[in-house]
Every structure is written in structure tokens, then in C-alpha cells.
Amino acid sequence: MENDDRVKRSRGRPRAFNRTQQGGSVQSLDRAVAILKRVADANGLSLSEIASAMGQAPSTVYRVLITLQKHGIVEFEKDTQLWFVGLEAFRIGSTFLGRTSMVEQIRPVMQELMASTGLGGRPPTASVMRAAASRTSAPYQASLSGATRTDGPEMEIPATA
Image 1 (tube, rainbow, N blue to C red):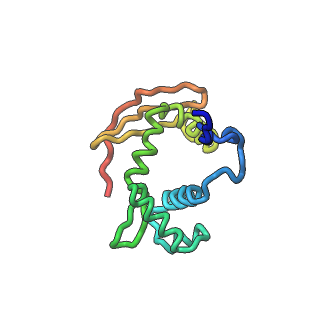
Image 2 (cartoon, rainbow, N blue to C red; image 1 turned 135 degrees about the horizontal axis):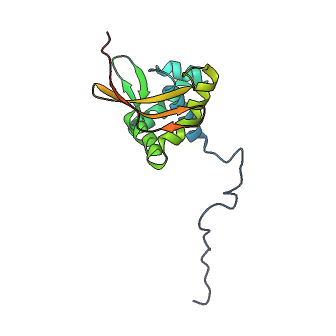
């Protein structure tokens, strides 16, 4: 071809990919994530409650919620007219635990809790409990001294009314 008029296409990331920019985000995605976080912070919210908390028009919030619902990220209960976090949001969030150790993620939180409350005995300790059927186990225990244990005791869960 003697006269090639094709335009060379750019490939890969934009030139400013690694730069941090204030305006480098997608506004609709930012709005959807903020709405999802708001729904996650409550035990069911109405459309008007979400819109008011977000400072957005109900029609805008509704379109975002419907889109999130389409993907299973939020759920709507017709009886109560409330929005909740959906199963797909849980599944997506759970993949985090697949790439990282739960123990490593909760250790700083537990140590801060023990230090700030002064609870936990001598030396202070804290446990994370995992329930299964009518029994529970403590897969992780931490102390302020830094000692950790990942095979805690199994015990009965008391029945309460």
C-alpha cells in the first residue's frame, strides 16, 4: 500500500493512568458506590431516606438502585419498601477473604479494641468466634503481647429467647 491513511490507535492505559487526579473518576460509579455504602450502613432504607442522606434527587437514586438490583448488589423488599445489600455484594466482598488471611486483616482491629477498652484479662486477649450449627469455635485469639492462636476452643452456643 503506497498511501496508508489509517490512523494509528493508541493501546493500553491512558497516558495519565498512574497519576492521581481529582477528576479522574467516573461520577456515576462514585455515586453508586456511595449509595451502596449508605445502604450497607443501615438495616434497610427507603428510597426517600437514601436520597435525603445522599443529597440526591430520588429519581437519580432510584436509577442507581435499579441498576445495582439488576446485578444482585442490592435487594428491594416490596412489603416494607426498603432497600438492602444483596447477595451478590456479599459474594464480591467475600472474594477479599480468598486473597488474604482473615487473621491478618482482623489482628490490628482486635489489638486496638483490647488496648482501647482495657478488656481481655491478664494479659488482655480477644477472640473472634465462628458459629456453625449449634456450636462455635474461636479460630483466632490475640493478645496485646502479640501472641496469637488460630485453633481456639469449641463450645456450645447457649439458647436464648
